[in-house]
Image 1: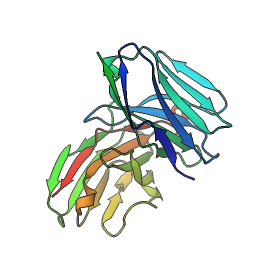
Image 2: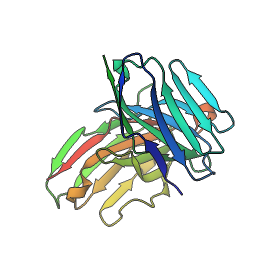
Image 3: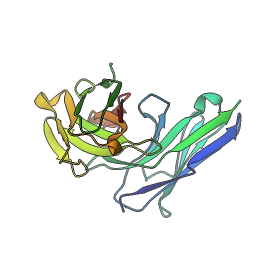
Image 4: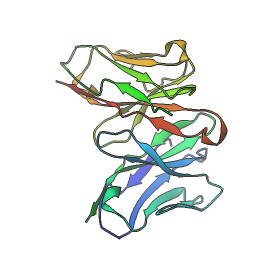
Length: 112
Length: 116
């Protein structure tokens, strides 16, 4: 019940294309859903986050879509660029404990 | 604002040896986390501190791993004795705990441990 399932494991997209990464959870106590971006040799860095009271949040080329009834959320990267090539992790958080449960990660490669 | 500092960046040891990692969180951050990230996997929480008290260490292998956060600032994570399966990146993160950023964890660059 504490797991967060993330797919796909890896993704190759052409420059300018749309990258889509999906996550699913079971525990309805989760109330904060961040996405982290990690470059090789670096720690994860917060990219964008959403709370379940909204269905979508957009920041620049990055959009989170949230489906509360399906217990799923996804990251969309519009106009993908080679600089977006990184590993992306979704996470689910319960505000009371502030404990992060991370997905298994998606390695994105954007071809120039 | 300085980020989360970790050292060393890399460590190579033989199995059954001991090793220690150090973390200095962002100034003023009360909550500190240690994660283990095995290659190809997401970070897994090992221990969470609130100031100098342990909040959650349910996934810490206590027979070989230990952690402390004296004075509620810096923290060290120790492995003794190390096993081959401990090869991973050990990430430290900190959280402010107040205001709009209370849910955000800030990560250090990690320590890559190789156990031979």
